[in-house]
Image (cartoon, rainbow, N blue to C red; front, side, top):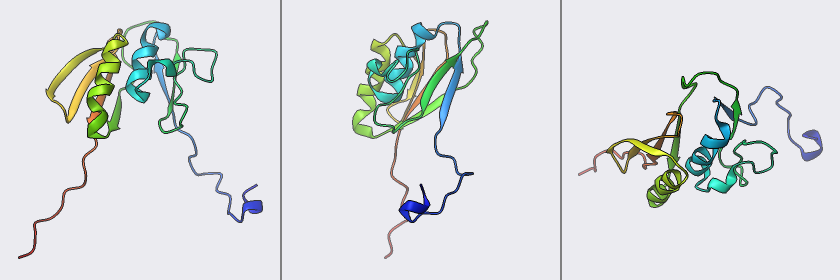
Length: 135
């Protein structure tokens, strides 16, 4: 297919990134992760018969849930958003049942947790720093 499009195939290149979270309560925690990752709790189960979180736009990685027998967190996610949507994203995660763990650096950084205590960090994307002006 790549050759038909005048492209060179690179099978070793990463094409999709998915995240996995081990939890025994995927149905409970999935709405928080859907809200945090996509801004929409309804993204839970999108395109999937399970609790998997899928962004219909494909801008963020899919999140699937594996079985776990304890509450030990298996990962954390940092989600970078534009400053103008940060407050809405936090509100969506809270409305889905999440809690704020640390907002001491808000709005630049807010640590959220789902009902199992798994943490996600909402970060406000900042433009790169510019060097001092000439003069």
